Image: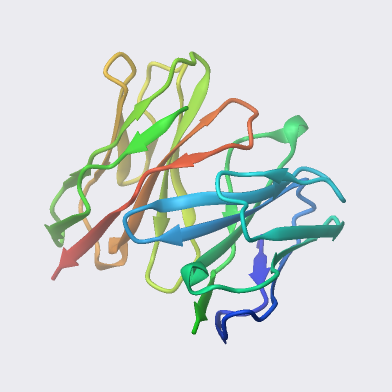
Length: 115
Length: 114
């Protein structure tokens, strides 16, 4: 059974703290994504990666950075958390261009609250 | 830029009845894919159904089917014989072929009444 695992389901952080959200997939997918989900706004792409050490900005990269040192792991970093980053964060993966189907496989999400 | 619009923030349906969720999109591309994803409460989002724009035949997956109107840029999801387990947020999504920039609508929350 395919799996995308996010390290934390719920986090509470203080303004200014550095936050790491980890995501691991076991499907040998080339592509990995970080989305932010807010009510009424749907899912918005923060960053995606199509290969190890490669990354591309999405629609809302400001205040975020990412790291992909291994194919199976994609980390989202909030250098200095702010209250407007309180949200649900979804990690997803998909096959690369050679086997592209468009289907995204999602993790369960990480709900971050910044106080 | 491509946009996806879901005009129904919430819908409800009686168990065993049929419900249709609406989605419209805007694109100038000819080769693209459309998707419906389901996000049950506190569970992972999963793909429900996919439609390739070049196919005229509407996609069907068991009780789930779509009405794809390419000229009208409309892509609705019909759920037949609704079950309690169908209660979820449903997201319509668009992607150009072989492209990582998938666009999502705002979502429709479906409630199923017993």
